[in-house]
Length: 399
Ligand SMILES: *Cc1c(COP(=O)(O)O)cnc(C)c1O
Image (tube, rainbow, N blue to C red; front, side, top):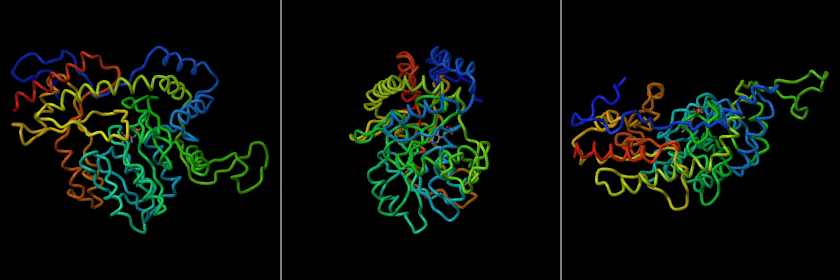
């Protein structure tokens, strides 16, 4: 562990007295009350709060259905199951993401194909995706990196042409929109995560939204052991009121009612959270846009990011320091910077399967140059000023 705040450059006092993390939840008394009320209710898991939470997610994203899961990774696994991914199938995704975007394909025995990112948006490049489609391609998992939706029109059109399923990893983009449409109603299935650093939290939690009746049924089945009580899905007739059937191999990926209760009160604050994230991102943009040693994230005109992460590129050619030195110096200033992400194919698990460095030059180049700055709605204006001041101080020391 780095000793925080002890290595400030110029030997002086760090910009901040206390450590500012890169992301953090916002929990208020209303949230606490909602969870406590659920503890007093007859239902701790899969009670009325689950459906209420799912209905609110569906409403806010414009999707027909929402199915809640124990976490976002389980939700992605369920989406791959619903899409029918199995051994021999190829699924195309981005290397510039959290490993869960790719791992879900492996859970179903499928093969991950990494398409490089576009150097402007840092999202998967539709032209690269197209060049990687084969007879075996079954699905595309675009990731809305940092909260800016991927090129969904191009991806959906390609998918239609080649009969592919699109599972959007929207862990970063709850509350974002694409050409005026909310994320969650565009792809065949869309995943949101409710991990504490994401826009709203349920502790652990995730959801899939979809407009498809068929996917909806398969997601429900997978969430709960592959068990159904719906006669229409059973092989045999009811033997009695106790009767149910396990018709496929599912998991226990259920969310609890306590989590859903928290999700409901959190969702009521989503607009406020996103507005504050945008405000902070705009402040960073205006500050770092004019800085000669940083490149701010590009934003396409036709989409509205919900700013899960704020990522700057360092102009390393003009700096007398490595990214690691800049990183360490900012931590010494008590600024909780981070790096999102190590390209997925760099991890030993994927390296052991034969994915080589060099397969995604744009993502790999980006990885060497990026820093994630703190961004979460509970940050005060002073916190934001501290980040700006510390970055300017450190860059000045190394320029
Ligand atoms: C957070 C995240 C996930 C997984 O969500 P969990 O709820 O933590 O399982 C998947 N993809 C991306 C891009 C994420 O950031």
